Image 1 (spheres, rainbow, N blue to C red):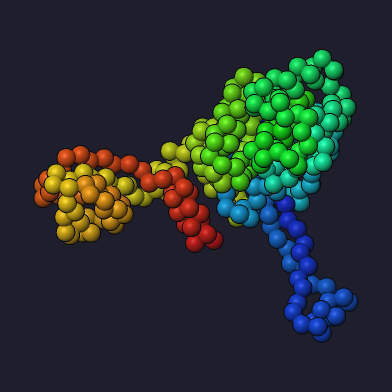
Image 2: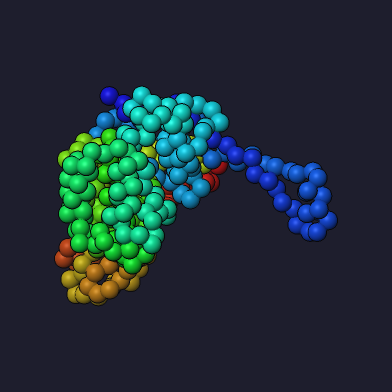
Length: 328
């Protein structure tokens, strides 16, 4: 059953065009000029119950705008959307109690108060029964390893600890749908891993439907089987990560280990030389040419070991965005 359904969802803004110069600025007070910015351009999307979907795109693609539309923060210019049967921008209280939005660059906790106080406020807002609230709070803070920090002012917490508290606050009312906008932004590797492990466990245990935006591909690889890519306000890919590689990854990385530990001359004729640190060599080769290139290398050079891999997913995503921008 589809929990999230979008049809032709679009959002545009009128942006004031400020001109340079004193005379032009004064003239703008009486005759203002505007231009239309299309943040989202007719998105069609369905997300099934208990899916964990990555929602990717370059800066300005419309990801955060879409999440704001689904959260009811803003209203669309055209199109429709339903989340669990609700129209988000009608802001029904029944809907507000069934979803949560976590934005890595926005704080919902009171900066100078302990997180425990903000949690109590959430309890009152969402009308959570005392026993349920305490049970859920203790479970979440134990899973995230921050229960001993509940009495500490939020401003004294590390960035990773604050994000764990933000997640706790968002999940206190046990939402059915969770929107995550860059939840690991700015975190170190350890904190990212901990957040990923928690989200994976929580989503599987509760069958929550999750829509995640992130610029960290490790988040996507660790958590999401389905990837929706948006660029210039439109969906350009909806499928698996491997599907992105097949569609946009036109090259392979060939790793070689030479017998004598030396780098033979003329390897550039087989492909782009990425690294030559004896005894290993890395070449970037066009996908279609890999069989022929390997045959030539093995026939002309003494090789101990060879492997063929896809390029890093970050490179493939960047290449995809470049291709899409070139077409636009």
